[in-house]
Image 1 (tube, rainbow, N blue to C red):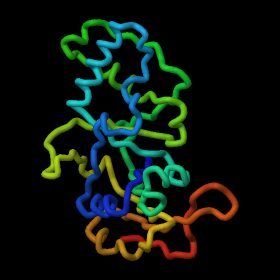
Image 2 (tube, rainbow, N blue to C red):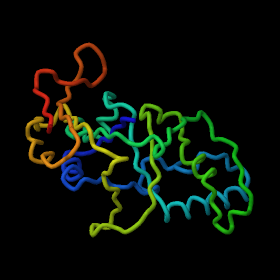
Image 3 (cartoon, one colour):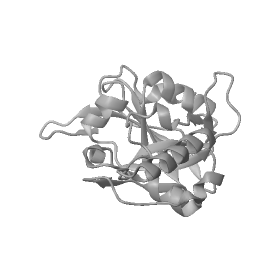
Length: 219
């Protein structure tokens, strides 16, 4: 499916050139309730879920996407106030988990078996996709990425591949860049990548393609 990743101009260009994007660590995400969307009124459950979260954060991270790119709030929060860039990917559906937004914390208990860190895929896939309803505007899909070797920068990355393929570059409305400036960066990509410029819509609170600026396609 086609999903979108908003970031700053600098990071987007680096992503395109190095064919990779950063893996987000749980503790670095905006939402402090990540992996904690569970009702924890019981002290024992708090301890178990705390251990679960602590263990998960040492083993895996997330790559987070949106199902759409036209929300101006997303550009403001994640696209450097509309000066950044949105990257559109075709990602294998099996990799992505659609986030479910909740009005209240769910009741989901696990037993003391977790003391041996026996995390089942079922439990992980369940709890990783829940967030508070006020985050609904993100329309998020996320992929779980095992933490392997750190980059020299101390960060983790996932490489582009056939299941994670760059297909669109959307330049923010306040960016000075234009599509043709990406020709050299995309010249060695095998698949077609379309580059277009965004603008603010004239009749609604949304972001749309700027039809006055020519689209660039690498092939």
